[in-house]
Length: 176
Image 1: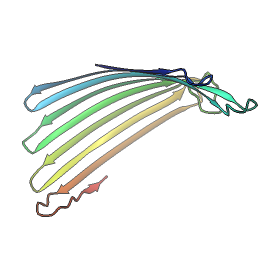
Image 2: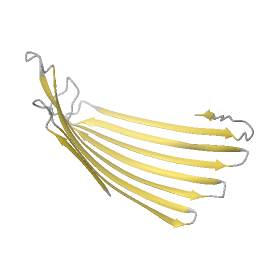
Image 3: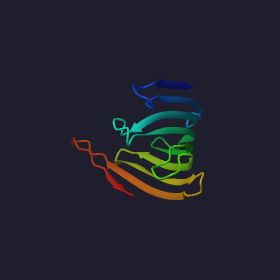
Image 4: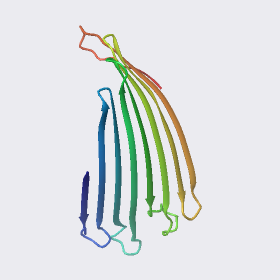
């Protein structure tokens, strides 16, 4: 379990900053060849900034407020003495009341992301192989209905590292 807190009033009006993070992590061995882990994190941030603060004609204050929640689970299974399988899933949610320029200051943005990854690792005397895939699904919407974006991305990868014992050389072959 962990906690982080930071706060300052700053030197000028609207230059304060506050950040609060809570984290919990647990990991357990199911047996000598398998383990699982889980993590939950919550973060809140608030800060102010005044653009063009030294020119009262054009100065305008902006407040940044964000809440981020992140939940992650993972597992590792040793398939043999030379190979293992890793899996993880993360769900993140962000709520921000920091609209970009041109949006109503009362507009909030809600984002959700899901990230899944599966990875195979083979550590042999001839070469090492790391291969796997990642799937990303994301969505952001605004409370005023002007933004509704979705993003999907899939990545499949493989990295091979030949073992060259007599040479002081590291060679990586990669493909995505």
